[in-house]
Amino acid sequence: MTATVDDQRVEVLAATFEGQLLRPGTDEYEEVRLVHNGLVNKRPGLIARCTTAADVAAAIACARAGGHEISVRGGGHNVGGSAVTDGGVMIDLSPMKAITVDADARTLRAEGGVTWAELNDAAAAHGLAVTGGAISSTGVAGYTLGGGLGWLMSMYGLAADNLVSVELVTAAGEVLVASEASNADLFWALRGGGGNFGVATAFEFRMHPLAQIVGGLIAHPFAAAPDVLRFYRELTRDLPDELTVFAGLVHAPDGSGMKLAALVVCHVGSPEQAELDLAPILAYGEPLMVQVGPMPYPEINKMLDDAYPFGSLNYWKSAFTAGLDDGLIDTAIERFTTVPSPMTAMLFEHFHGEVTRIGVSDTAVPHREPGYNLLITSVWTDPAATTENVAWTRESYEALGTHLVARRWLNYLGADEDSDGVRDAYGPNYERLTAAKRRYDPDNIFRLNQNIPPAAG
Image (cartoon, rainbow, N blue to C red; front, side, top):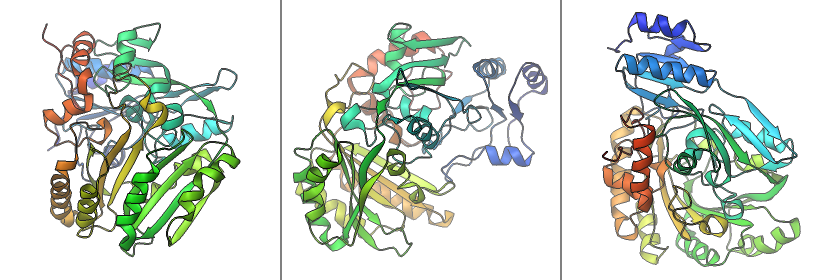
C-alpha cells in the first residue's frame, strides 16, 4: 500500500504551487511515477511536478514538514532508480524544459527537466555543441551532476567541465546560483558530486562551434573480437583530441541475437583530418557493416537510442580498468558468449585528451587518467528473466575483477552499491565533498543518490 502525504499539507502546498500535484489513484500518477528503468517500481506518496524554482522550494518544505523522504527526478534515465521514492515526495523536474541560447556569448541555459536530445537540437540551430549523453534521452541534470562523459570529452572535456553556473534549491529552500564567482565551494561540488547538495533547477554551459562531425559504427564478426579489441588497444595508445573511439561487444540491432565486436567513432575535426585519422580504422579487418560518415552532431547521440528503450529492465555494472590487457579481453569475450539477453552489451569507453588534462581536484570528478572505463549494460524485457540477467552481470563483473581498479563512474552506480563503490566514485575528493554536504545539506535530506554523508560537525 502506498504511503500518503497529509491532506492538509498538500492543500497548503497547492495554494502557492504553480505546477501539478499528483496523488495515488489516478492514471496520470501511474504514468508519471514510472522511470526509464522498468526494474524500478516505486510508489511515491506525492509527485510534485515543478515548473519553477519556487515550486521546488515549496515541495521541499512540504516534505520536510511531514518528515517524508525526498527523491528528485530530472528529465532522463536514472538507471539506479533513486529518482523515485516509496511513500515519500518525488520532486519531478521533467516539466521544466526552457532552453535559452546566447549565440554571441556561446552559452546555453537549460532547465532541470531538459534531455540531451532537446539541448543538442537547440544548440545545433546556432552551430553550437557541448559534451552530452551518448543516448539522447538522457537527462541533462543527472548526467551533468555526475560528470558527463561523452563523444566530445577528448576535445572539450566533460559536461561538468563546461559548466558556467548552476541554479540550485537547497535543503533550506534557498535558491542559489553557484559559479566560480558565487558560492564557489558549491560550484566545485556540483561538478561531479551528484544530487547531494540540493535540487539543480538550471544549468548554464559554455558551448563550442560544431555543426558537423564524422562518425558512426563499424561492426565486425564476433569471431574476430579478440583481434578487434587488441587493435582497439593499439589504436587508442595515440589518438588526436579530435577523435573519440569506444569499443564494445554488442548484439545486432535486428533482434536476431547475433553477437558483434563494434567500434564507434566520433571525429570533430576538419573533413580532411577526419579522413586521415579514420583511415586505419576503416581499413582494418573485414567488417560486416560500416556506417561512418558526416552527420550533424546531434545524430551521433541518437545512434544508440533504440538499444535502451523506455521501460526495459536494466542492471548495470562498471569500473575503470587497469589497461586493456589480453587477460581482460579474453575474459570479457568468454563471458559475453554466455550472455542471456540479446540486448546486453559490454562497452569500453576511452579517456584521453582534454578530459585528462584537468586536475584531479579541480572539480569533484576525480577520474582524469588516460585509460578505459568498462561498462556492462544488461538490458532485457521479460520480468521472469530478471534473476538470470542480474546473476550473469554480477558473475561477469566478478570474473573481470582482477583487471579492474578502485575507480567508478558515478552515474553508472546501481542501487545495490556498497559504500566502497560510492567512495571509489568520488576518490580523493570524498572528504572535501563531505564538508560541502555538511554546509548545504547537514541533515542529509538529499540522500536518495550516490550518497555523501555530511562531515561530522
